[in-house]
Image (cartoon, rainbow, N blue to C red; front, side, top):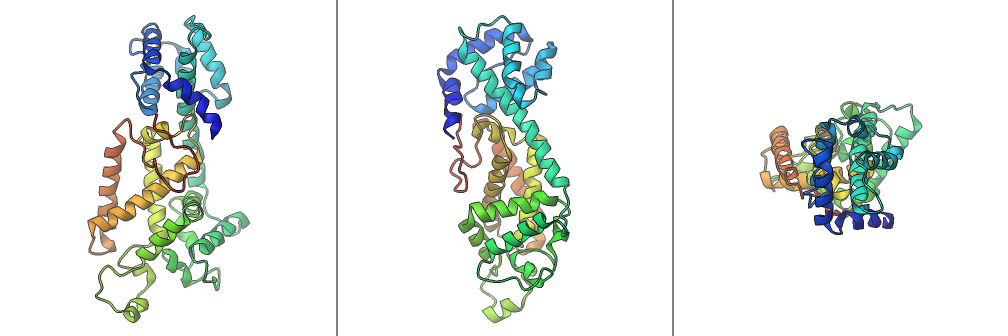
Length: 321
């Protein structure tokens, strides 16, 4: 997105000037201050959010709830409150606006994701059914689905004859994430599906392996793991842990596509982690998932962390500020 480049220019040229201006400004706004000792978008955004939330000025507190369309005016009001001339200090206004857009965008993203999570899969809804059929075609392009209710769904990692029952925990969010992965990083998704259905050891010959149920694979059930990783991504988002990543990769407002790309990255990383952990069977899934969750949380404590800087499915500029 070329239009994102101009705000970034303002944030990065030069950081020492932005830091001094913000610190001078913050000393008169509240005791904690809106600091910009920020080499990364995450440092700047998280520090600004904390300072605004605990400010003695109602204008700064209410800024965190601003509508995205009102962000520019809100920044103008803050600059006017402190009698700062935007023409004299243009970098300050740009930096504050970028931070507030990220803060407001993160809040808006939580609302959007929560709405999808709460929307149950409805087999009477043509749009829902179309997405499900699309998922089958992406993951099994050479195998027609013989019936809507079919054991074939186990071939892509659902638990039973009807996938709708597996979406109960994450609602439409789980299906949308799986479909996004299959469409935008198809080669990786197909490879992961193939790997997940392979026996862990070469102890079984092919006929014996094919007689086993797909949902009893020694690997893991691809679709079910996708729904579980959706839950993991959701928990990272609502807990605020994903702010580090999203503030570093989204120059302005994080959106649903950023979240879906993060899900795809987490799927790939979990697949690698599962292989590294070498679990004896699928019964160890919860242990491996918990350990993987802790590792991601540790990574996100690094303020410069961007989870997917080289993510193949991304068609956005993922910029580490």
